[in-house]
Image (spheres, rainbow, N blue to C red):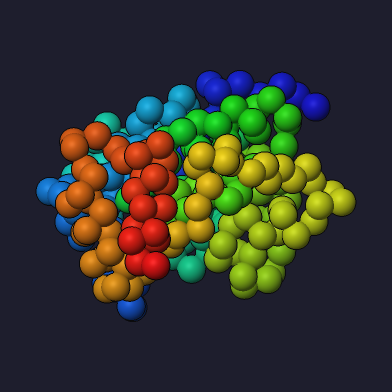
Length: 232
């Protein structure tokens, strides 16, 4: 097995502005920044060779200024075949390891993303994803060769849309790592953005917690646990 290093890793932040339930949700404002900008700022502290927004041609004009302002790259790939988008980007940036995040998660955790990448590098895993964390705080770290296998072999629509299932559905073939987060960071609250109700909840979280820096799990989880206690 070839040893991988952080210098061969890329952060690919998947952004899509065509959501039917909540159109252009990645551009919605939270505490003065767009959802996607919060995601990018949280991932800026994670060591990687490249930081790239992965999107499609119909989103380019709205996302390009955001990427440029943040010092990120913008990569345009197929609209429907997200797996192909990731594989083509991995080839373009010569990446052996990909940290995959999605643009509807403004509370993606810097700590979890960094730990996920470090774990993948240490274990040589083809798939790494921490568990028992708030839904929307995590990332996936994927080996580029496993993604190439998936791109070459699968015609399953779900596996092409969601990128990683081809890998984690085959634990006999690939090394899968899904360690639990540390107990103090464990929570099951949904903090992703998919509906108007999600957005209202996230507005409350950012209004109460955001102080100009990404909100990480050391601050977020105690707050979420307190909300649950207050609701009882």
